[in-house]
Image (cartoon, rainbow, N blue to C red; front, side, top):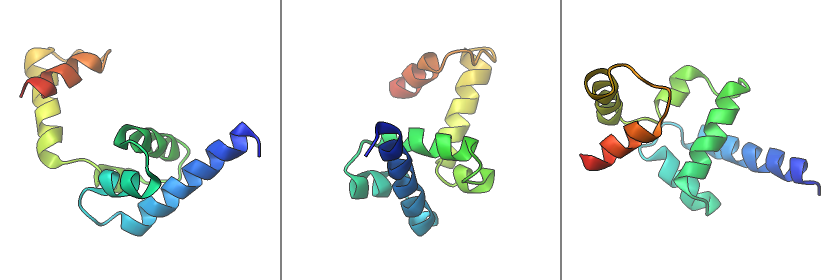
Length: 97
């Protein structure tokens, strides 16, 4: 099996688990545990799948925690003055909290 085929299959497996568990809390953690992958890897899969049109925006938003989203918004507006060019400062600010 070629590398590109393996990548397609791993994304398909993530997508199938996403649809199977999309209404559950801790969706990323559930998929990561079932796939024996890191949650960050699953996040990257889901972003790619969203960009390819396999996942709707409404379903993608279910992956996020409302409190985390509010924290990110607050950091961007109040501490980074709207600068979203880099994600690392946002991550660092979240880790401080």
